[in-house]
Length: 110
Image 1 (cartoon, one colour):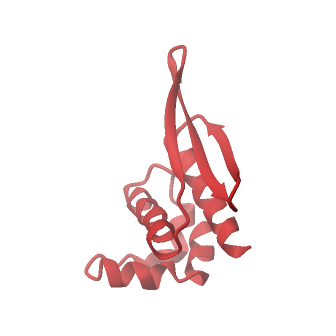
Image 2: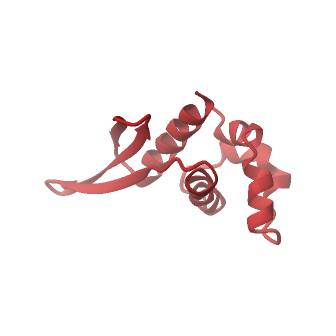
């Protein structure tokens, strides 16, 4: 899934420009899906995407770190309907963030 292409159709970039007018990343949006997960631009945009769903669409998700022996893993939680939560465990925060955003997009499209 090309998340930034999907987000464009959901109105994310218009919302982003109204929130952060001077920090306009929208002209390069076609390349964001190809950046490494830990790229600083992608990191900033992903934080804004989670805020976009929370504030504009009242869909909230969260990422929880936890320790397994000497490793830190990340679980993301995303509400689905009233009673069901979707969750999964990943190796890195960035992977959890990406999966959370994919779930938020899928929930919104229902």
